[in-house]
Image 1 (tube, one colour):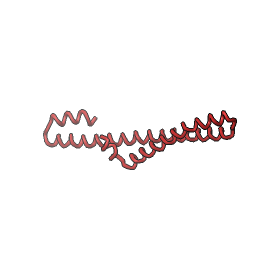
Image 2 (image 1 turned 30 degrees about the vertical axis):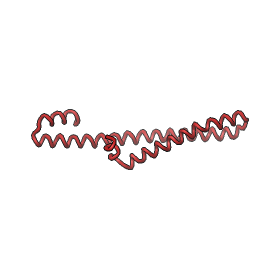
Image 3 (image 1 turned 30 degrees about the horizontal axis):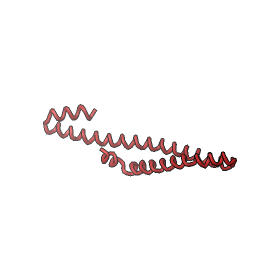
Length: 114
């Protein structure tokens, strides 16, 4: 099934993998920024604290945008793979109908091609 999912749209599957990696890196870096922010707060360096807070906000907002795009692309990829699988199974059911195998045809057609 994974092979079929990857074959549905290879560029989209690659984009999903790339977006996931970038999102994880941004998320990890955003969490890393908490420690320097606390050090700036303790040290009284409020200008640096503000810069780090704005950088963290930008990273978090960008990460949330990437997550939304990734979710949309994943649902599109999955739907395309399901449609491809359904067409493949319906083709097999139609072939079974033409060959006269009634039981196989009814079972396949009723379960998969709804």
